[in-house]
Length: 154
Image (tube, rainbow, N blue to C red; front, side, top):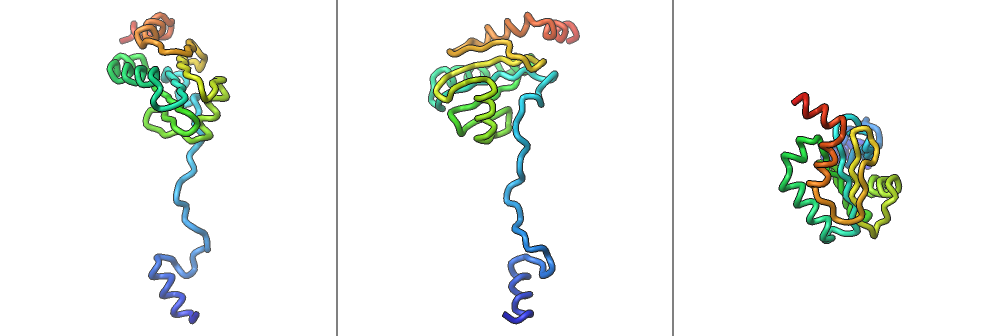
């Protein structure tokens, strides 16, 4: 191909003739998810379920939506891991690797339902393998010394 024709083709496709021959990145590499980003700021509620249709998962999600103000008032954040491929932490979509890491860290098999309350200090405060009422979780949080300090300061 003649140099003029090559320059014309490069300009037509939006390439600069002297630009490095690399492909543009189509997706930025996200940092791996870690619950440590919530430490000392929020209380994660982790919900693991084998699939999207699991009854306890639907009930717990509904309870969070219905009690959103109380949930947020306690500085809680919802983290879900469904199966091996679907997961969210607040508005962040979790990767397959993120979900696998959470399942390994908290020893939750793919076929099991589990709800874990993580304290602001990063420790597991409650672990259930069946539906758990948010009322029970709220009562537990409200009894924690850090939460009682928060309520006194409000």
